[in-house]
Length: 299
Image 1 (cartoon, rainbow, N blue to C red):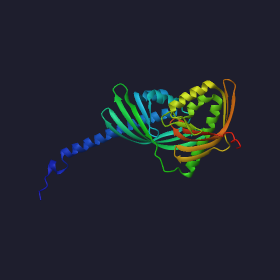
Image 2: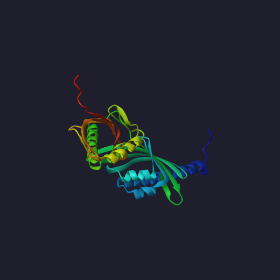
Image 3: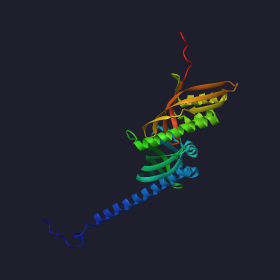
Image 4: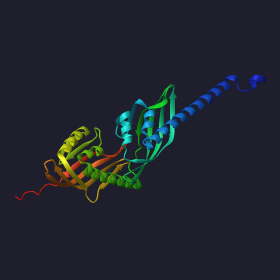
């Protein structure tokens, strides 16, 4: 066994002390950067909640991109600012629960866990959102956000309480659909249909609109030819919650249409579709209309 030396060598070596101090300094810097970026992201959440598009415009880079993980839809900065400005739902709280950050010089990536409480058409909803955030730093503007990708953890099936709240929210949305179409005419469907490739609409066994683009053209034609429309759902709108943010919906309907020549059409039938909750609120992901036809001729 080696004899124990005395003096300077009897305690920790100088290299060990220096290494320990360096590690402590690195840890404190990393924690400070994580706090700084966490505070920045909470500022963004506060601005989003209050629809403060001026602050959002400052916090996002000019080339900012947003990816909605639920739909795969990609939005640019101008598109995202417009969505926020036109958001129908009221966001009651938007809280950053945690954020893990990795920094490499002027680039950082954060994984944030956010709690959202929102009210739409009088119905309150709660959800947890996981956001992956890309930060970039410049000498003039400091840290800003260059990209965000969000996802909502999904369960196999909503709890009974969540299912009831979701059904109420979808029924309120369908009520708003009928009111807005009756008030604003066919153009109101632009606000109710999902505006991406996932959308399609069928009627009477035929695919009428294979995409949102086709629906947009069809709405333009209807707006030019229809001067008055009244849409009403039956007494009960049936909602089947499929998972958080997604539900099948079905209802009998009646519709009155008057064209530019004054011709009136009274129509009744049954509507089915899938409603999906997106950043801008509930939208119809697809739709099908079945019209009650005349009774068959007696043979």
